[in-house]
Length: 566
Image 1 (tube, rainbow, N blue to C red):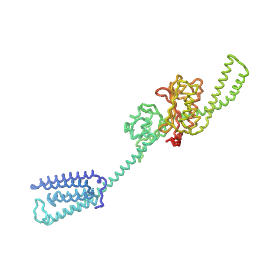
Image 2 (cartoon, rainbow, N blue to C red):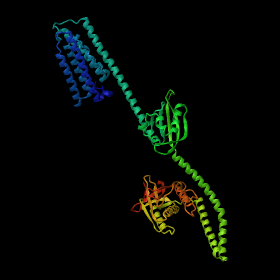
Image 3 (cartoon, rainbow, N blue to C red):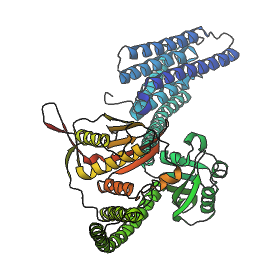
Image 4 (cartoon, rainbow, N blue to C red):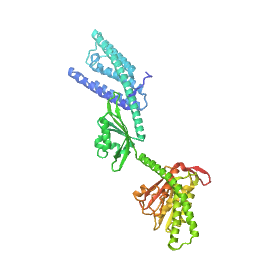
């Protein structure tokens, strides 16, 4: 008996409270019904002892519950409660007519309760105890040792009918104990299986949710009727709809007005049995511009190959399209560079001959007036053409960066000095340098990057012909990239101009070659960086050079040692 344990939900106090409450209700119903029947069939029947025993049963249940809270072992407490209940039930049988009482089957209640709480051994044990109490009481009653209320005190021989009745009761007690114990064990087994299934289902649901949550693609699951079952966070972000707003809604009502092409693809997939792989279409998100999507749709079927719905997996192709545009632009620039190098090489030699001849003639032939002005114009334009050819060659044959550890603070300080002393810059322009990354070393080609900074600084100054302030700001971004921004107070940049800024030979300046920004962009890309351009809210434009995290090497501390930038 000491090895028995409560299983499943019976270990929980809430279940024990429910059992005690059910015990009180069943006792009240059975005893109350029996009292009513006895009073109707017996004129002199006294129900007071039964009421007293019913109250005593309630007190025993309350004491059992209190004892559990005081530290009584649950198993021992249940056995004690069952034994006390058998004794009380024997008393109820006695006061309700003895062996022939209509309450003689009340023992089955305790047997069933013991079987469910203490398994088959508990049910059979209480059945044995109930049988002993019933047999002993029958023997005592037949010998006249106990006399039920209203009966004669004379001893009576145990008749065949009484023996048969006792045998039937005892058989019933053991049968109820065995069957109830077996059913209780089956219920516990099914309960454990159900609990394991719930745990496994919960684990699978958590795993599935985590997979969907961390996927880089949008996932949309739709049932066979077109209702939305699941949408992951990436899909919410791409489509612009929240999960709570569209779950269980029909795709036609949800997407048709804003994304007809998207809806048509989903509906066609629902109506057919074919999967679709890697199609591209354009959708319009709520309140936003259209964006390109790459979508694949798979059929969702059960184990019997019955169609249950579809799964749509899609990605935002905006970055892919931008990358494709950059690749096409790079290819175009490479072709232009090769062409420029060839043209420059073919032009440079005759140009050198022309320039040398003109210079010799200018020393040997004395010209005046208009002829002198024309001679000077030829020399000047020859020099300008030579500079353009040099720019061509520098753009087309950009050397590989000579990477070294460079202090960004010192580099920007030198650029600011060069800008201040540049004769072509308006004297009314004020240059301010703000640094939030002092003592940071960056791995780059200092000469090439200075050329980029000077180009951006000069362009910013030229954008302010009436003077203003040029702000140079260096900072480390949250993703650990380095950002160097050149902000002016000029007129800003139009959208058409911005889209062509880094194209070779495109310029908005009189006499410009259109290679300055193209060369600067090429240098920055050679350092695995990029140049971002935007118009400032307070007026003017901002050109920002973004140097990747991998270029940030070390930081010098106050003791002169080097430490990694993290």
